[in-house]
Image (tube, rainbow, N blue to C red):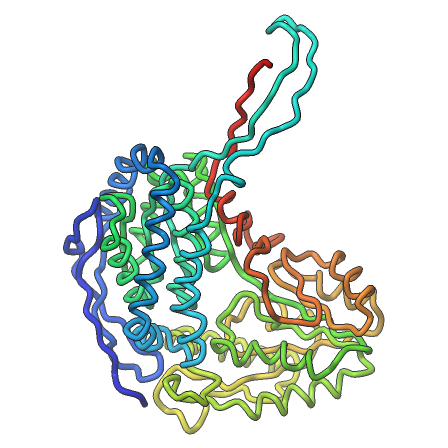
Length: 489
């Protein structure tokens, strides 16, 4: 294994001051080595309440700060993150288990890019004139030409609660647009890997965000995050994670009518037609294994394949999986690293066992023999039907389920037969058919003959995959309240 990275963090950022966490610290474990990476601050419920109160106090002045001043700080934050790239990448790899390629390309640089993206002029999002309307007199007011402006105000205090798979990238995608729109934030990273996010908070503090605008708590247990979701000082919760936790957040926030932005679970279907480029489909579906060990909600974890090419695609996927090196994430040639924890490893292996009972495991399915240490699971391919547990529930690991279909109608029906609807895919040589099918899929995002993303496109899910959209200008809209200003003349 590569050299052991260690980092101890003991303090939280509350109201512009770094303070000791109320519950001390807890260990962060490297998923590849099972060794302690370092200590993370363990916030108490009182810490969470203090952070929310500090954000509430700072909100009026920050919302009134000219947009160009806010955006200049975002620009400075992007530069500061890039300057710390060589320090942050090894830390992210150590605490998440991300491979060197994912850690160096998708974790730290993308975080900086997101701060850059939201440092642009926001006026085209913030204000839009509506055509005047000639209105007759009413008992309310005289008639005349009535004009209107749609104006976006900040929501207020945003609790940003991020997932463990891309801790920096995910948090940057929440914090940057929220701050750009004039909100204050309480940052709450996932308990498994908060250390790089603590450093992100330090960067934001160092570049000059006013006291209370950015606050940070981290905690091993759920109670501090739960306190944020029910706090009267918090106006909005932005959450990325499991559907189950999202449901609890929605229930906790209902009494105070919290605004919600939630990216939840996924069970992406890749519908592969008989005229598809099989190699392109295999490469895209294989990204489930090669991209952060399947710990990504957008992964095409269900390969819904026309029966005429089903065997060829299964054979191709098996060959693809067999070429992926599973091992030390610090080594450049490694494509599949560990899962985040021992508990999650056992959860994924349990889903694979259910696939053995209900279908057939045609590749992988075990913990790698050559890796007795670390939370590894082999790239796994299961064939069967859409009724299998492994096809119904989000596994969040390196597991693909392949399901055959006989005609277009059946393929669409299988893809839509899921409680999730985050990200689906269509592979066909007939692009007109691919576009038509894409519009019939009940998913917030559909890739046609590609697994690539457009980061300015609206991103979010149908059904149990979430509420709201972010990405590009849609991210700015998500962290705002829409106000109509009306006048005569």
